[in-house]
Image (cartoon, rainbow, N blue to C red; front, top):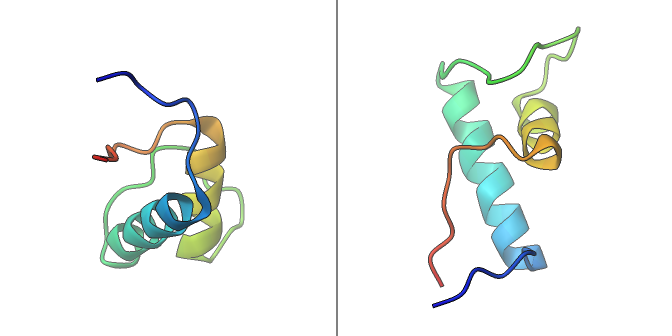
Length: 58
C-alpha cells in the first residue's frame, strides 16, 4: 500500500471536524493559539501545518 499525498474533501472535513471536537472537549492544542477562540479555526491551522495526530485509513 502506498501513501497518497493528498486528502479529498470528505477526508479533510472529517479530520477537521474530529480534531475540532477533541479541542472543544479539552484536548491541548498542538500549536500556539493566538487569540483564536474557535476550535474549528485551531483545527484548520493544525491541518495546514501538518501536525494533526490523526491517520486516514483508506
